[in-house]
Image (tube, rainbow, N blue to C red; front, top):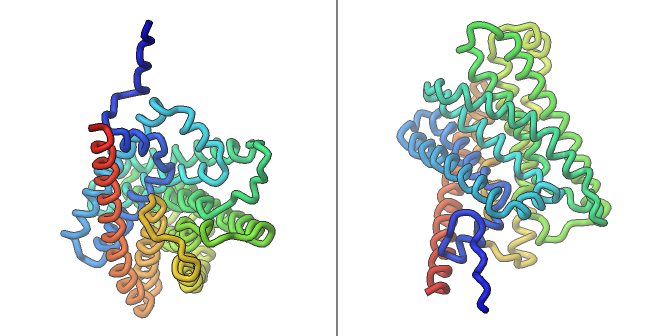
Length: 360
């Protein structure tokens, strides 16, 4: 007697390739929204509104589509999702959900869509609070026989990025709040401070990992660029806090934060040649193939964030040279975005085509 064929989990996907992509969907894919959104912010800041709106539309569509795919994956491939949540080298990529929400909220706020921006900022803050306790707990309590320190990598910096994105979001909504401005100021300073502290702690862990276990060219993946992006977003968040309306917490920390952002920006500049050199070491010296992977968006976002940080710092502190650097970096970030976006579309098409060919 023939046994009935088991049903596919979740909604039926005819294409085998797409089904495999869904099962192994990267936890950090919201970096697509982060990178697209922050470049849209930069273009808006320099007056390129038409291109900025195109990227905003792409970021918004990507945001909705990714939520659909993440929820779909959680239902259809629950075990794969839970495995990612417990994997030290993958789990922290889920903080891109927080940062992506925050960046999209900031761009919508800059365009005057506060009815959309306000709830997204609150949603990002809620996700940051929940993820900030649950994800580290899942990772640090993992005991699978492999040392956690050896699996520390650049994705851990996204935890700090998500914290800074909440600080920027608070600065965006404060002018539109009629009561409770002191609480908004408190949350902005707290999330900025937590983000800086997390950056320092994660940097120490990553350095310890490199010193004790080393790092191969294959292991030096694009998320290590977030080490620069996390510092750049601290510059933007700090600049925004300095400009916020007076509250007790803002007034108590304004001078301290203003004094740090220029140092943070300088550290970003120092990191960039090192990261470029590491890329040359990885791809040209050791011939690691350069192909599309979702983590490439972890390069796009830091480049975009550095450009916005430079433009903001240059304007706030009246530093024309720094602002000019930001304009140049924005052009580079936009070019890199175009390359990665086209590569992503090509990858999706090839996966669909190969799966369709295999099933026919």
